[in-house]
Length: 556
Image (cartoon, rainbow, N blue to C red; front, side, top):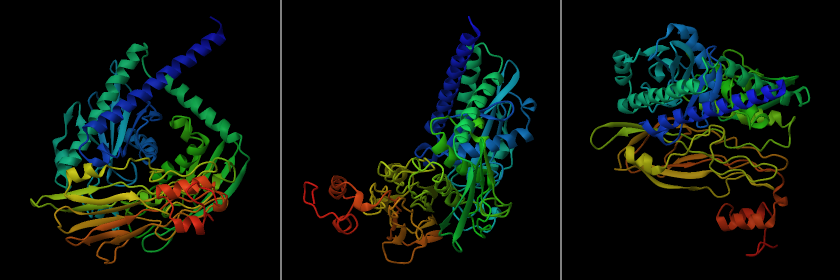
């Protein structure tokens, strides 16, 4: 065999193992989903799963999962293994933490790490991150003034010692949360998912007669980084500055970015962004890095599996004490409200370098009301539902309606929520005229109305934005509709914070739509007619915005 043939065979061999690792990590994620107790994990897939080498570099991740979790986990596992070096661990050990500054940015996210042993030696680790339904304190919401008010913080610790669960840690968590069975059940599901991955990784080593993953990891990470750097190198060097304004809590929030392409790396500097908030909408740097780098990779590397190599050429900085690099003990519970907006800001800057790939702005953050109350049997309950607005239009197609970009979480079926807590969803439907008009229309938001199933009062912790600053269109496209929060009774309702809904009253959420792309008068008449027939656009908007006065055949 020639050297070239040997090199080609080695590449195929590595690719085969790489794909097998991704597949078994997907088994890890699906095991977690199938065994989870909460709807956030079981129905929405709000999780991540990944494999890390001995140097704590992320080698591969599952297909299922959110960028906020998996890209934060890429940093979190480094912290875990600094405190608990792999060679100090034993088979059957499991590590756990929800420290926001070490993991994924707020107390509701637990990261669970399990070492992988082969022939008596630690060869890496598997990890996952999940969002639990409750962690005590004020509950999931933006009202806290510091992290101490937001719930229970567990520093990195060994929750399982050589196969024996630490009963004290489990009990400590159980007595501090409102839904102990769901929370503890989800943590056991996390351990079960890791166990599946560990067994399959060991089997993979035996099947391919490998002692460890070091050579494979070097190849996967090295090849990924080389491709990413090559693609960055095709862009012109330069800096683009952009800003994005949000509703905020106490006042408006400005996110500012200087994106610099310099040779084979991209630097994202968020200097000039608003200072830390006095409320729980602050973002830790781990989470800022997670969503900022996701915005880059969506456009430059959409076809490359994420790992250490795809993240390394992307340098993210934010001043300590800013809202994108909050310092302990800032309140951070609703950090997703700011973090989910970062990809749109990054994409806006990238438009100056790659205009043919960047869409208009979308709704961005998910609208996830945190709801709690007392059931008819006196049992306290807590839940959270995930809901998405519209995506931004592209230069050649309409935006996706009610699609969770950038988080990627699935919308929970209302039946699944109603089956677990005493809530009743009165309606859940597309919101007409919410998609930004354009040659290509922005995706639609949705209207959701819900109340207590037995007309009891309940509490809602609102974490909504884009009620004042709608998603902007591009190249003549118009903005999408802004969001709106109201009560059926007409009583005032706020977009942020804990508030009571009286017995018999219901909450109505109008989710924002995505921005349009291109001038509305350039939209194909048949597309406008189809929008009219589908109820996406009203007759008034069709005439006034699109100039459409045609009949049933779509002709003017």
